[in-house]
Image 1 (cartoon, rainbow, N blue to C red):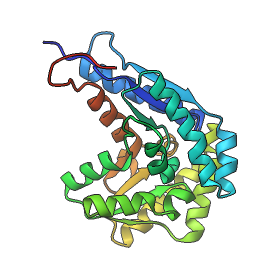
Image 2 (image 1 turned 90 degrees about the vertical axis):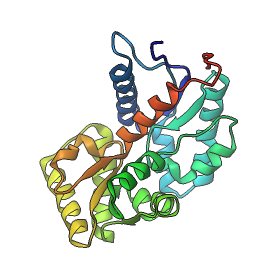
Image 3 (image 1 turned 30 degrees about the vertical axis):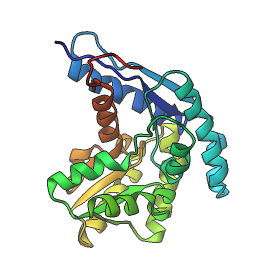
Length: 244
């Protein structure tokens, strides 16, 4: 029997539109690799306004961020999505609140990466992303608790510099050579402190540097997240019935 997609993927987009487009491309590419022909992923996306979310995050109003994103998640659930996923890393800071607001699973971005690092035998990983991702601890804590992997982050000034590049350049589609050099510098600094690999924990950072160009093994959290979504969407229940 030919493999079929049995679950509708629910994508919460608009964090930023660049990241939404990237997720849409990745899930469809992953589905096509698995299914061949003219297949793509069956999905439903609810797009939020990044300017609103960015302002709320900058003011530290994460309760409101959770409320806004939870509304989007409930729309996806009402639309028939079998599970939901956030199309950005930073909003996972409130992933538990969003998951509690819906009756379908929320596919957490840290888990596919944790499984990949665990399989490769890595115990210490350098974490690169927005200032929120690097400083709030929600990814590092989950990786350590669930998979026994220690996450290292750059010093404060380097975190601030990378955050500026992501927000002021990459989320607007701007790619600069100096920013690429900065990213490589940060990765090398983490390696010198004992990181065995790099976890690229930002949807926009692959726009700046491909995984193979890092000075050590690098893992794209977004790509692993998208692959895991397609894997889940292709799973059939025990009766063989189609769901979603």
